[in-house]
Length: 309
Ligand SMILES: Cc1cc2nc3c(=O)[nH]c(=O)nc-3n(C[C@H](O)[C@H](O)[C@H](O)COP(=O)(O)OP(=O)(O)OC[C@H]3O[C@@H](n4cnc5c(N)ncnc54)[C@H](O)[C@@H]3O)c2cc1C
Image 1 (cartoon, helix red, strand yellow):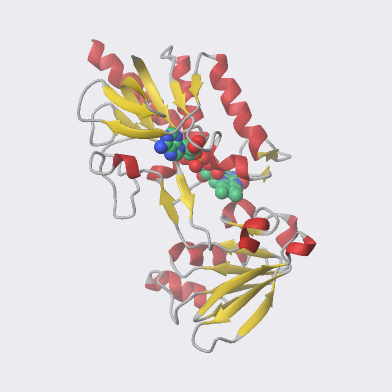
Image 2 (cartoon, rainbow, N blue to C red):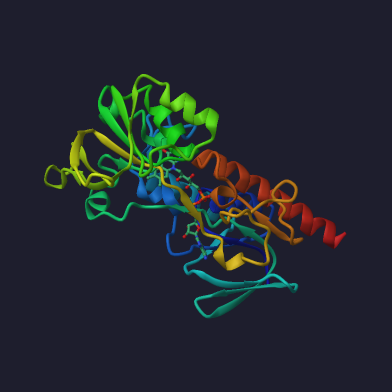
């Protein structure tokens, strides 16, 4: 029987593990298909406090893990396939094996939507990125033309943020008006550095042969005419998919699948807590995920203490 089982091994999961290990709860971290989470996919992290020179994403999350393991956290590699939260202890199935747990911290993150282009895939982290806050200030994007694809609030926020760095920001959207809230759309479209490219989709990211982004080919869906926008970066902002499908029906979520905590990090099921990007469609940063991981561990510890009183 586990006192604390943590689903996910990203910033939120390992921080929850660190705090619950230090509370002597010997947490078990279930890694999922992406051990280390999203940070392992990025090279340089420049906004995690404490690393003035920046730090490689993989190196940073490896340090999270080592620190938690030092205090007794354990890891099991594997994907949680199902969760029975209707009974206590809770039952998790990991690669066919059943794990019983008194408390669970869900830290399963959110995957970003891809455009689905081969060139996008090949140039990821070489100018193609999914987070302007994370990457926008990198030297390769400074004073360069940039492209954002998307039409919602996130795309507008990304475009506005990038106006601080890029010389011009093309905003490519498949319709002839933004989906974003009215105020955000107006702020975006009135910015003199932002140039909307309406009714258009990205068909190719250039240039795979040079191993860096030099431009973006877009096609107008109404005229079928293609054009190449010179660009040093493609910022894809077409949404995220929270990794919460296995909790559908048991845990309260919004219409997009983000878990809605009831109070603090507690969910609607007593003993089940949530941390990180699977409950956050606003901030989505390593430091915020780590912060809620800490909070979830403290909430789980207090829940266990109250039960044993
Ligand atoms: C390219 C890129 C660059 C970024 N750069 C920065 C940056 O510079 N600074 C910054 O602050 N943020 C950055 N971010 C954002 C940051 O990585 C995320 O906000 C952070 O990783 C969220 O942490 P998390 O623990 O909530 O989720 P994740 O890191 O996504 O981890 C989720 C974990 O859950 C596991 N999981 C999922 N489903 C299951 C399951 N069924 N069973 C078991 N485990 C499961 C996964 O395997 C994974 O280990 C970047 C993101 C990307 C994609």
